[in-house]
Length: 605
Image 1 (cartoon, one colour):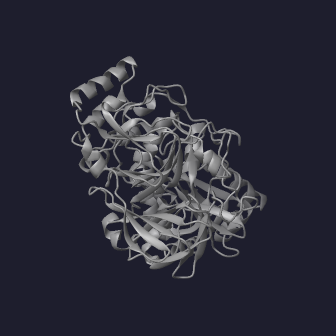
Image 2: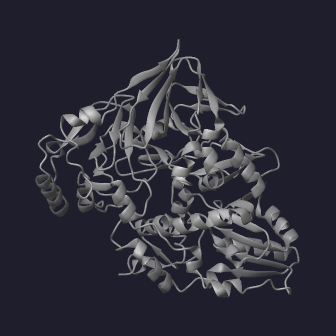
Image 3: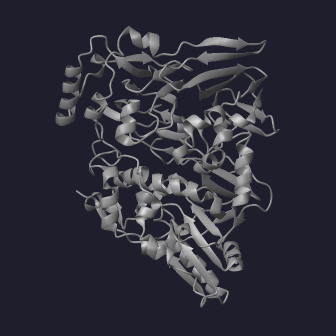
């Protein structure tokens, strides 16, 4: 069965501003105003300032620049509103008394049925949650000979090629690249105002996300890296009828700056059926009309952006640009091992006044590589940032676990919608603040209600095999997918009994200390490729990167000042995530609060 034959409808690009996106979260402001950061308060719009007159606002300024060039290429990412952008630019050029010839790359896409056949091996069956990362090149989607045969028409004052993959036309002219943040792409996807790359149909959200993740993003990210050297202008396409843009050389300067000092990605927040209330109560600026928040995407770099600022104007680009341009500075001695992938993930799981996560596990390395096409697997840890009442973490099997009985109970629950006495099969441990639970692949686990978990993990983030989900429905009233077969191909049933307490709950120890500071090692499992330290200090402390990237969060205290060797300084509030790249060489923490500050540091072994 073809993916686009089910739960899909023809695309209608006649949209209104209200319908463009489906989310209660506000758009990134086009210009800083009341949203400007306040010291010591979690900032949902962190920026890197580029100096004056670097970022320009509005289609009017962009069109003036285009007119000077006469012939340009406007390329960009999936989810961009190409028709709206073309209409705005066209009208402004006409208003100047000029003529414009448009060449639209969408015209030269292969027939949709042919594209569907091409990508189907990477999407598997429509009812499957996961696919395999696409191996196709962006050229495979186009009737390339017809596209590259197009030439500027001298009868027109202005010639513009527009659409994803526009640079394939290979004209020696300036390239404008319009990027789009992954959160906004998904808000548009949920509103039904965009389609997948090469498709003319709007499908159910989970089907579109699956195709984005395994096909569109893979192909378009690879292409973005290939054309980085050809780009002249970078633009941010998330505002619909408005736009911010800058010259790529200025972006490169910004990327070079943060790759030697301090990086903070823009976080974004998602509700979920099990979500709680801690994020809503502790993080200012997010919409409190949401029923709950389950996740904060603190540093899930495939879906996070970096925000730059000039004269108050903001421009967001995907984290990919940093890795494509500066992966060696960011990862240091691990750059060869991980290439352009940023390997560590930080996110919040909020079940505070919420519900239990599903009982779950993640795939072995060989399994995720062979079945899903990933390079690294989803090895996790749970760091308890906060909790209340009798909160607990489910981890490992009971000593007397019988795999066959467990599978039978799960299968009966899935088929007959009956409860499972999970405690008969799975152990649980009380939550304690600052404790680290170790969850290498194949380990059964779950975060119970009333926790705030800082999930420190390898970057892959969607490969969760749910075995039991407490019989609940999703936010749309549908049963949540259960993946018993996948799970049982990966579960390690020897992770049980007393072994869990000894091997899968970290045993902190002080490895260095001074008069008013100490460095605490929270050892991870031997299967984890990253390790964790907690830096505790009353006044200040100096730290070397040793040519290694450090991913960090203030987990106790009001705020700290961070200063890197190049003189860059930033203040971070409680629960903010930041990255010190390897090339920063060294940095200093200064405690701005009254009590002892504690900072979690995750780094590659």
